[in-house]
Length: 276
Image 1 (spheres, rainbow, N blue to C red):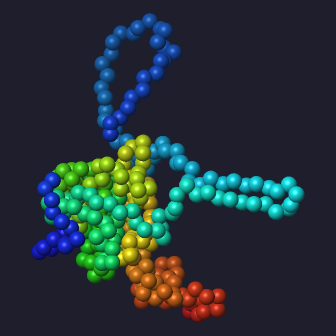
Image 2 (tube, rainbow, N blue to C red):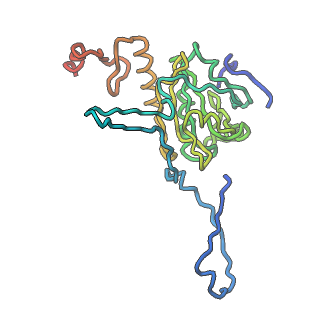
């Protein structure tokens, strides 16, 4: 962070492949043709324009059984895992780059102290990623006023993070950032937040808002080619903080600070609808 002294929550420390399958072609039985010279061209993987071959695992199994002597039907649903929103955020401790130094970041250190914006991005030295990372850094002071820390995560090493931070923005780099970039080289963090693409070994653009109790209150996941909105993240954070401070109220669509909220009651909610 660009502060005179590092955050007490951050402590210093010293510090794809592609597979090719060969197949037997029907042309192999034909006489050999004269040798030709081929050139190889490196192209951007389709994953970076939002296309990827991925079969999503079944998230829930459902069993329906009918009783033969009764008109009633019993329905049981066995979910394979709990949803992240509304549950404690998976804790982690990992190396990160902050202020051009290697540090340790532990998520649970923020419990009881700060809200956390935790966002994942696919890879360093790519295209959409620096626009998001620098946009959050440029708005860091606004999040700080809301008692919120920002943490960025990718599967790159801290050495890659450091090199990217030391690259000028005009050259596709990040320049100095005001929050840490975490290294998830083991991919364990991405997997625990359910944003890892197993076949590619990189993370989708997942973003999570974690409250001061360590509970995930919001999540959004974009495909690789779609950048996220800092404005919408800020608005959602403000709405979350408002309803936590005013538990008898809820925030309608597009709510912003200063606008009318709503009472979650069949009668009292009519006050809101009558005013819009």
